[in-house]
Length: 316
Ligand SMILES: Nc1ncnc2c1ncn2[C@@H]1O[C@H](COP(=O)(O)OP(=O)(O)OP(=O)(O)O)[C@@H](O)[C@H]1O
Ligand SMILES: [Mg+2]
Image 1: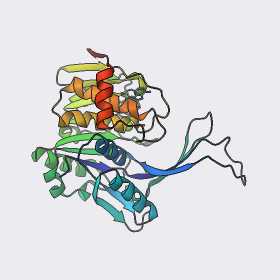
Image 2: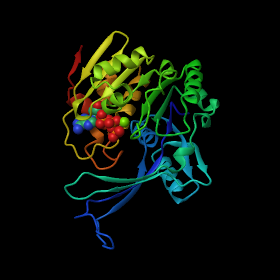
Image 3: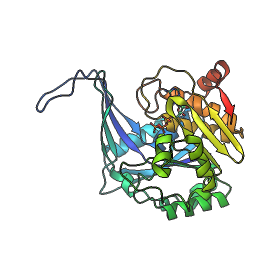
């Protein structure tokens, strides 16, 4: 029986080892290796939770194509319950081509594919009977996940005693400030990064962002700041956490790993400070390696890291 249901974006990532230069038109450039793996907030968080020995299921959409089978197999092999993944005829599986060039930032080519067909109403209420936490990753990026449908889903989850966790991806040039007023009162934990907070609120200070999201209804809000750590607001509590010192290789998936770590803390009934420690450890572990999940700690690695490293957490 799963304890957590991760819903939302599922992607097949094609990644190449760094190439010497971008090929010109008609040119062939070779790479030492190419990887086909999973990406997307819901898939990343689900794999991270499974690495932490949490029983987890995923709900989302893939295309009726070979990539849909590949990502489903990958998730199943990672011990994620895949029975609520829907194969969607007429759509490709969402994919990202990640082109690494030596000494340069990564380039992405993305197709939204079947994620554009995912709706909050895909999640049957019977799925919620089993779980303690419902996580939705990639809100705003999925055009058919409307505020009203998601509010209804989160309200029903809450009524069943399921905690609701929301993370977002803000598409470029989108109007997003009006998509939270009805939803946030049903969100137990809201986890945007600072840039996303600024795009929604027009405010750059992460503490002010978190306090505003609380006033809009979220029970707890954590604003993440990459290597700068995070800021938490919950009731009257205000915390600023630093980041663990790790060798930085690739930031992708760091936010999803942070989310998974915080959820692990909630499952163990830990308070906000301990949840921030586990979340920050998982986020830091992720950025040590290329890809969204390979670097993420297993449960025993995380426990050892937490014993051997301290995180500065300041009460504001
Ligand atoms: N360079 C780093 N060193 C240590 N910890 C990091 C680093 N980058 C991220 N983290 C940890 O992971 C958390 C989340 O990172 P970040 O704010 O980049 O999320 P994000 O922008 O949502 O990332 P993504 O969308 O790529 O998954 C941070 O609050 C921090 O605890
Ligand atoms: Mg994020």
